[in-house]
Each structure stands twice: as C-alpha cells, then as structure tokens.
Image (cartoon, rainbow, N blue to C red; front, side, top):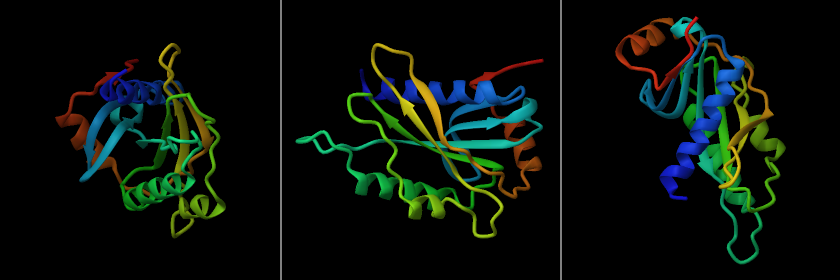
Length: 172
C-alpha cells in the first residue's frame, strides 16, 4: 500500500467515524481551516452546526524491536495539541494512525492528556486511534472523548460551506 493510500484510508475511517456521530455533516478532506491544515473537517447540520477538526499522524516504531517510540508519540501529540489550541472549532481530535502490525496500545501520559485541556477549562482535545490494516476495513476508535471548546465559528462556517465543495455530505 502506498503512503497516499494509507493516508486516504485513515481519512476515510475518520470520515466514517464522523458520519455515525453527526447530524447531516458536510465533510472536507485536506482542508485549510482558519489558516490551519486539517486532515478531516466536519461541519455538522448541513453547515449550520458544530465544527469538528481531526489531525492525523502515523505512529512511529523502532525498526529493530518493533516497539512503539513513545517519545516520538508524545512529541507528535504535543505538537498537534499546540497547533490546535487556538483553532476555532467546538470539537478537536488528534488521530494516531497505525498499520496494525504492532501493539497498538495508546500510551499517552497524564501530562499529554492534561495538555489537551484548554486553558480556561472549556474544551479538551479528543484522541482517536485509527487502524489501517491492508486486508481489513480501516476503522477509527475513540480513545479519549473531546469536550466542547468555546468557539464563535458561525460566520467562518457559513463562509467555508459557501466557498468549498464538501468531499462527502449527508442530506436530509
């Protein structure tokens, strides 16, 4: 499987995750949202509801032992938390993508999980694990549920929906 196929399958799994949880979402892949690169952007209720952002990264393993590089894992998570801290959205997710060939436990420490909390206490970034196994359906699993951030995004969402064609949408 090529890297492009791997990423596409991971994005599709996140799209399916949002499809099951949101009411009439418009979903955009590889979006530019308020100056931030987003792998999957979902705007709920046909563009009138909450904004959900997901950023993914591929998990790194030590090639000689096949063990998860937990330092790299924490650094990747913290970098995306810092990037998403000010992103205008009600719900934010970071997705760790795995090819299923290793132990796919989720080793985030309490410090990483605490950093996912907003400074004012309104909001927490959620974590997904996405398994992209060549001979199986890719799937996203919620590891840590996000909490709603304060976000005034109505005009931004209206403008985005008005100027961009969704990659996927469910209509009433």
